[in-house]
Length: 214
Image 1 (tube, helix red, strand yellow):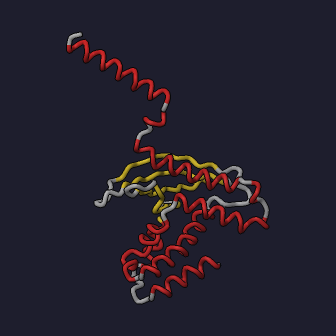
Image 2 (image 1 turned 120 degrees about the horizontal axis):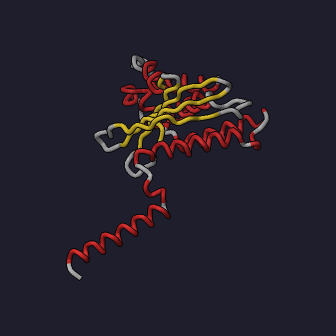
Image 3 (image 1 turned 90 degrees about the horizontal axis):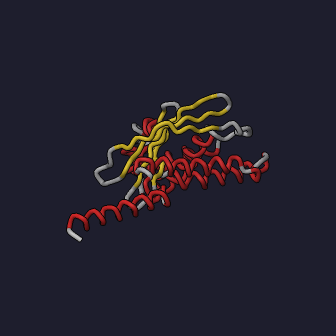
């Protein structure tokens, strides 16, 4: 067999193998640009499944349902990044233990704010439409980022909800900010904390705890 024929045979064999892999394993050819959306869909679907779980029906199951929803939210939200973004430059004034404590309570506050938009005793009409996924520039440290636009339809009202997601090296895609009706959760809190260098970290932490209790 001459060199040309040999190359053609190898090319034909490679083509057949490639086509077979594509047919048998379609998930392999999923665009990298869709990876954050798939992660988001899976996370949101898990939350919606919990909302629809008959085991949590009734007022007496309200607290159990709340805890189950928070557990699902933890798997898709990067609450530590939420906390750092909200405090901005104030984050450096907090000790490691204070940062951890703030993040713990702030996670509850963010989760409550987000889940309020989809939690209700009558949510059977809930519909989430994913409109657009846009890959953003990676950070200097190599963290990948994406912006995902969606709409939440519930109780005859459509609410635009946009997600900012990030993927650290070796990690998964997670949400680090949410815009609800154009208002950034992180940006909203960062504006509140921006000029509060005279307030002690403990005072700020206690305020978050009080908001959760309300």
